[in-house]
Length: 477
Ligand SMILES: *Cc1c(COP(=O)(O)O)cnc(C)c1O
Image 1 (cartoon, rainbow, N blue to C red):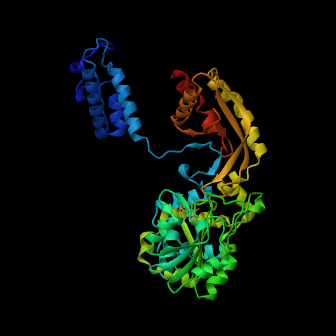
Image 2: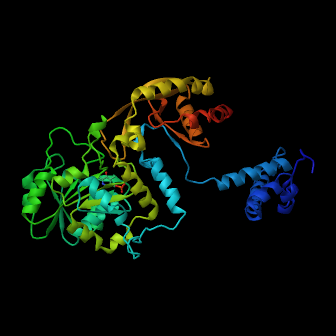
Image 3: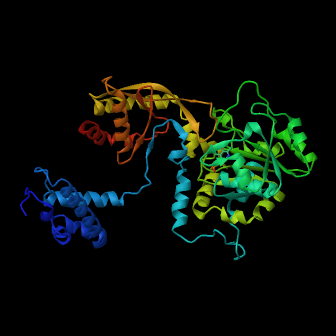
């Protein structure tokens, strides 16, 4: 077939003919017959439909054979590209729920790699040679780090809260302040979780103020639990009052009732010691008298998705007896990562270096600013003349429902369209181009600029190495 011949649908090669076109046998050698044939058939089908739709267009041409071969190669590449991909988080939010929350420490990644391709002692007691319990892998460590008597791990903190309520208040009443009826996002809303756990929610106090007497008056014969929920993703300010765990524990325990606390993020260390805003720790809540405290593994703790429950032996026993506990159990994959992450806390002096979440949160703004200045010329060159690029001071966030009103001083780059006309569309197109890169770059649009916060960019390589491709996407468009 001549290279530039014009095809009608009839002139498109058969699948078999396409498989013999130069370049295609190499594709078969690499990927095997099945995938190449499937994609060849799909490609030819699409081209045929396209040519038919343009039957009256005298300019309509089917691609030449080499064009078909490269289109087929591109299809196969796209077919094999995973849906889940590494991206560059330049949103300024360190724990970004939509971008996978905490990054695992090197040691945790290493442990997952080592353990997942090998049999392991997930539920096998190496001392006795008998069946073991997966909780045993991290229970002692969690108890040491929080001061709890017992601990368990489940799929996430939502599951931990569900189990806590089901175990301590199933079929009876749980009392929660109206100021703490949180919605975490998705379908996780405290009143609905209560219902799903089979407990009746008893609301006390008001949105802004709840007092000890409110709880005392609500306690009745059907009360089974007092519950405290950390208002992790919003703040009630102004004329406010809430009852802390120490007071609540006294009220609950005087009547023989347990107190549970949903901490949300639950940092295992005092963030204040690292120059960050303070978050309550599970240890503090247990010391204040909580019987159970639950928190996430992939928020401030900096590990994999998991829900950690720590507390009294008796309360944990009630959780372990629930069939739902088995349904919500954690798999070996996060468990391996969690153990390695918790180990890092045994050496707190090294934590800010080894735990990515803490390392990113404590990154000095001077270092971020310096990086912005180094990157600015390269980015400006790639985007000129359609956009201008400036360095600027920014305010990032911890994210994932931690300290919603605190901001982290940060720095980065602001990209603005050179022309005012059509600026909004130009910005959207730029954000789209950044997301279309092999390693998508995610920024945020604010005040008619695209902002790239560099707090989470420890290595500029993945951005700088994609600038040529970005230039092509932006200027080729
Ligand atoms: C984040 C959060 C949850 C849910 O935790 P996941 O680990 O995301 O399931 C529950 N309660 C509070 C207060 C939270 O902040």
